[in-house]
Image (cartoon, rainbow, N blue to C red; front, side, top):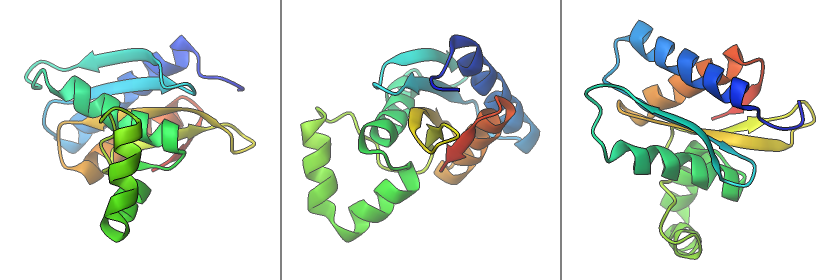
Length: 142
């Protein structure tokens, strides 16, 4: 696959939510962005706060625009706060540098897009995102 399709995005969301239910997590919001940072699909479960859209998008946006997953962004923010502050400023404050922003990679390692999941702990969010990506037959970098 050379790009994310709407069908793959829908599978990612459906299966990420299924994983969150299996794990007994709080209500989730899941977004899938293409390689340019444009939303392909989004879903917010009943009971999830409406502000979760911006958080899900920020997790995925930072991953796709910086080419690094949320876990790496968080580590970078802890080690070099000034870098993530500057990057977030460059991207209009849209970056949420924590786990749950997962890069979707092609077979050759190229960035096809990203998934942002929010609603539970950041690590649980990342686990749900990875399950959705894998169910779509793609590779995730959390």
